[in-house]
Amino acid sequence: MSAAPVMAGATHSIVGEVIQSTSAYVNSAPIPYEWTITGGDIVSTGSDGNALVSLPKEVSASLFQNTKVLFERVLGRLVAQLSEGSIRAQTSGKDTLAVEASGYTVEPAKPSVSVYWVSMQPDKIVISSRRGSIQVVENQSGDLHMVPEGHYATISQPRSPRPASPEASLRGSQSTKKDKPSIVILAGQGTIASGLTVPTRIGIGPPGPTLP
Image 1: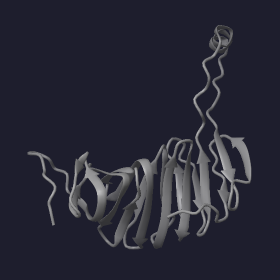
Image 2 (image 1 turned 180 degrees about the vertical axis):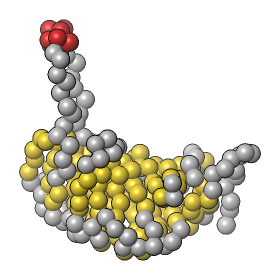
Image 3 (image 1 turned 45 degrees about the horizontal axis):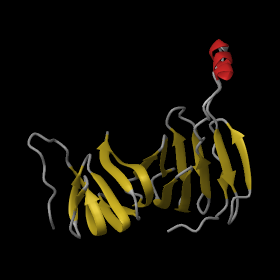
Image 4 (image 1 turned 30 degrees about the vertical axis):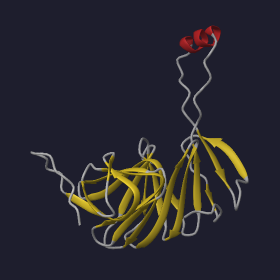
């Protein structure tokens, strides 16, 4: 197995190994079939790529095409920072893997055998619990939401506002109250069935999207 080069003075420890891959990269450098990754390494895949990452204590992460993940250990916790694409995490109950995506942290609700999937799409995040209950924490507010086994959550991100007219900008500058950002929640079976706009809430739906 190949070993990832470590810069002089670096203190990052080994966090896992890429044990199977196609069109995969570590820190933008192409890697062979297998590779050792250290804390702070970014594993990414191309349009036809995939990677299976083995982590300590029978934890694994599968990266699908066009995916980018930074792996690290923070205060003893395994963390995968997902910035693009889709990741499937599997744990045995001996340890957990926290997946961070666009201001949310997704992980098993308790140490147990768990299989969960997180996908960052252009306008939403899709979270699916295949086995075990999953908790989703909004990092800024600390709000916690549960996704039961066999269910999924779709978090639609607010779109960027249109440029305001000079008159609207003036009115806005005179207002002392700032609008709180809201999250558009969509949930349903098979296809998205309903939607509502509420501040800092996640809608939970029954099994629906076909996920890897």
